Length: 195
Image (cartoon, rainbow, N blue to C red; front, side, top):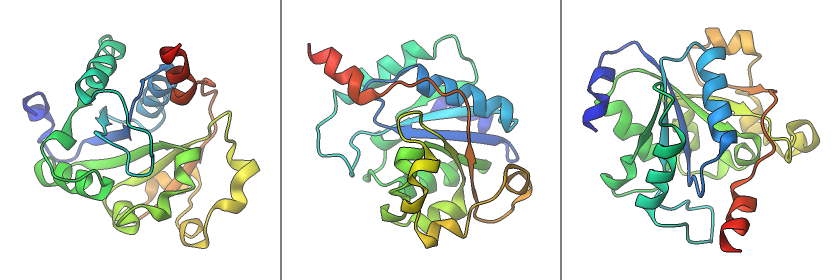
């Protein structure tokens, strides 16, 4: 992770967008750029997962997905593609975050879509994740938060903050962002790849 040497300085605000990126698309790019501007982030790192433990389907080759991500972000200097999972023996977000935090002592924001957020309390060490990174949840056009809010567990609800509260929060917190996120799905794009 030599390209991250300049981020070793503490005090930076780093967004982390994790996922299979199978394939990456304009929706990923949109929320990355929006988060950079909206939250005043210094950079967004795309954390490409070797395998999503909550998904049954086997993804495309890991290195191929890294290349796809690099091609999509080549004109975005503040979006970096990382292969962190290559160097640790875990697919769990908590372990990925610990590895990053150990080497780069910055303030972290985990960026995710509303569809993934509803399963957050099923992730190993999910409460510890909230202690390592504040969570930015982007509403998905095909999975609107308002239509599914009853699925948010009480355990997660207690950490919800308004945008202003979130900006000032020093402890575990998540906030919901409603933006004009493109209605694009990796699942639908995969179907087209197979055709």
